[in-house]
Amino acid sequence: MKKLGGVRLSHHKGTQDFKTVRLPLPKTVVIPMVMNMGAPCTPFVKPGDSVLVGQKIGDTDAFMSVPVHSSVSGTVKAVSDIKLANGRSCKAVTIETDGNQTVSEEVKPPVVNSKEDFVSAVKQCGLTGLGGAGFPTHIKLCPKTPVDTLVINGAECEPYITSDYREMMECPDDIIEGIRLILKWLNIPKAYIGIENNKPEAIKLLTEKVEKYPEISVYTLPSTYPQGAEKVMIYNVLGRIVGEGQLPSDQGVIVSNISTAAEIHRYIKTGMPLTERRVTVDGDIVSKPCNVIVPVGTSVREVLDFAGCDTERLKKLILGGPMMGMCGFDLEAPLGKSSNAVLAFEKISEPKETNCIRCGRCIKACPLKLMPTELEKAYHARDIKALQKLKVNLCMNCGCCTYVCPASRKLAEINQLAKALLPRT
Image (cartoon, rainbow, N blue to C red; front, side):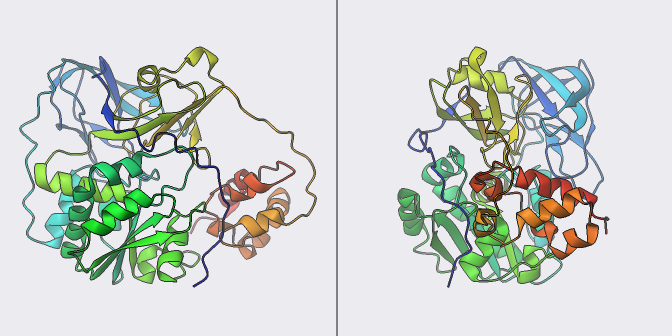
């Protein structure tokens, strides 16, 4: 079967063999009340309150949301408004840690006897997809159409990031047990773990681990970007096309990040909600690149200081990967549930944008064979019908078009702006 295309990137996976270390407990954490794709939570606590690790400190009745828990034990110092890296404002709870990390009595393994119990437990874990998008996991586990296949995303195709790789190497049993829980409670007969071929040790280890589980297979994928995008992975593993306006479940598939699967098992086993993240820290001014476990709400500065970053030389801060991550603007910004990398650079390139030379490289690079130059033209003309005909909503914002453009045109950015012009349905 022919695979969907993309681009080949220099991966710079310098931290892949660095075992995960734990960040010393910060003096304060700032925990946002929204760390997912959806509605913000309402804080349950006020200044002066004592809180414990795993205690629920925010929730909402909104469908598209998950609860928020304290990552530390200590005293609430403030409930205030903050601005996130994506420009969104929300309430946040500032907690001064007491150094004890006392666990709340609320933390206990959930009782799971049915699919409904399982989905409810995943929600109460506060779990959002750990690949970066932050989609509430419990919603993904409630498809409206029958599902016959679970695809576990272990591609980690972005440069620099190795947090999922370390999950595979350090916690393979959690991954496998998390997959088995999803298969059991959602009555899905088959699972594939998709891993790029530039991770042979992870492929070998997980292949050995699934030998006694015939319902789970490891699937080796080409090392191309954006291999980890849902539509790309579904086609490359199963040959199924997720059409415009469709969800993966419309094609009988659920896709879950590999760290998400592991977290599901840990929560069902221990009852400890999602309160910490493994984060890759790297960049040309980071003297001690690492993979580090950080409490949710830890500041970017705290993590960079731990990794020996000379922030005085910092020219570009990226939260996530360089292809689809966001530029950070505040070193005091807190890291959330979906944070998987902090990258700090002094040497940056700002090429000058020039006229399109009609070379077609962007079309060749696009995994979905869109026409970025035509989309750019339609956007500037504010031609809604043309944008719809050109299928701008299929764009995943992977950035391949911008990456290969010899004229340095900001094609991926234009596509995102073009989507905002379309009428909402």
